[in-house]
Image (cartoon, rainbow, N blue to C red; front, side, top):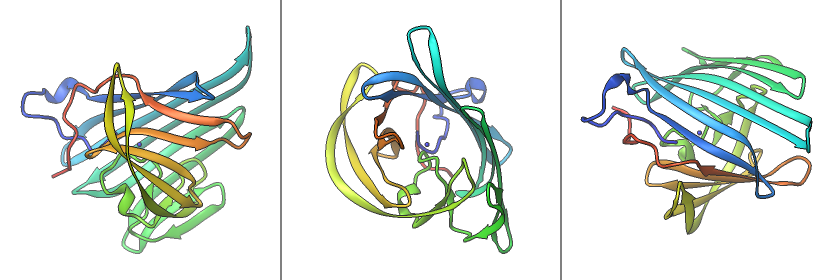
Length: 212
């Protein structure tokens, strides 16, 4: 998930803008969640990589890796292809817009979901206006209610900035923070009960704005 990316007039197209979050578990860094953007004709491509590891001393007892490539065109989600290795358990999902909606092939086989469903990657402006999303790890349709939860101060690189907080309640249960259209934070409870949090590693060297 930082926001829809449009290169500012002063930025070169070959700059390949990117955004990186530190992933924290109970306050301790366990990995990174990165997003890299580039243009391909009229399309915007977002490549996402998540790498996490838990261990004790020299021993690693849990690894997680997720890669996802999204394609957007004219403010519309077009497709994504993802692969996940959840500590040795592998998943693959492909979602493609069709005339009938979004065709998804994932953990539950082939399904068709509504045309206004977007992937659970949080970064695209308008994410909070959805009522359902396609889970990018399993390919399942998720539904949730979005609740505005006020304004708070969050860490962005070495600074602390005001951001709006939103709570998702339902199949997706997490909190998201946005500064304008920029996705700047996340908090959730992991299946083992631990607290997960995302913090921007630094301020992105690009302008994040709505897609034209």
